[in-house]
Image (spheres, rainbow, N blue to C red):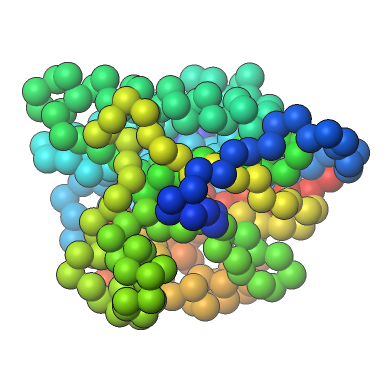
Length: 268
Ligand code: MG
């Protein structure tokens, strides 16, 4: 389902909640960044009956939500989350604004559980706001965010998942995690509680950087090297989005797959 405003998971400790610096003692005045190109695509994949992913593409605010729950409630959960973000997108400029919106998204999903057919629904949320200080990120679950800079792709989020914890503690390898029977069990999500322990961070952003937010329907099907190669070889972000989704489906399409891409440049 395509959301209203062209609507459609950084690196944090699982234990520590990093606070986004909102009032630096001395702000280095850099040239303002703007989003100069964007693209998004969400696909049901080849095995699932519904698409329970949702996404948001605004002028400065971007997000991917991957819902879970029976009777299409996962679709409702992810939609409630991105709609709550979209409702405040215009007034969002600072990292604190993103935190406020992410909290309102958590409340919306939690409150939605009052309906019997939506009880137990949940969703991941990975949201990013282009601010004057860099890229503010709020993240819960196993959707991911990456930055592609000068041909090198860096992951900006840590999976809040059972296998993610096993990898971080050294008990299994990243490759083993990809085949683990419990790989879809997430340890943080919107829905269970009115408050969500988001991982928040401020990522550096420079002109020319491309950012990717995606659901696990992409990262569970193709490797990061393949993702980086597709991004590097595509002539535009819409082409890259199409090729990423196609690659996930060609690899089996076991899950809904959603990609949000944006490139930053100097504001004119
Ligand atoms: Mg998924």
